Length: 262
Ligand SMILES: [Zn+2]
Image (cartoon, helix red, strand yellow):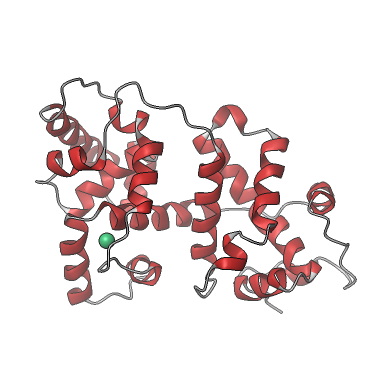
């Protein structure tokens, strides 16, 4: 029997223990992977992880608030946003905003913009290449070009500007949805190879001018990367988190029921 993310969210909303137990066993490992990426120095910080989990369980978290059908990748993208929001990123010494980035990277194509944007998300060319289905060398070349274009638009420059401003740019992009912006499903259709040529053309055009959607698309690619090879949390490690969240032990026998990942 497969227990889907949809059922998990339904059970979490209804406060059925199985929902929360499934959440802990399936998504704590994903959260750890994201933490190790965004804050390697805090990767083993159980208190921080606990604090994030408690936020997920509060009534105003995305689990309760959102009206989107809870597809697993959408769910993990929400979780990632919450997690990144909890990390106190230091303000960049040389601040840069999306307006500057728009002006600088105007000549780049959609995929090239994604290659540059994944740098703000701290992904190396070796990591970003497979996400974008291009070679790491291509990512590197695009980033060198992007760096030069940015250099031409700012008074003060260094090569790490995108990484240093990553958190702030990510917040600005995520907050700036327009009326023509695309839904998560549109990006997942591309990831799953379900999009039409026409759909892809429209997306290309829209993403040329929209960092909100470039960011959204990149975050969906990131989710695929985060979920790949993710293992379940062993039962013994789930227990402290279950206690922390005040979730009663499941009455239904066995964890095996929850092993299926739909
Ligand atoms: Zn958009």
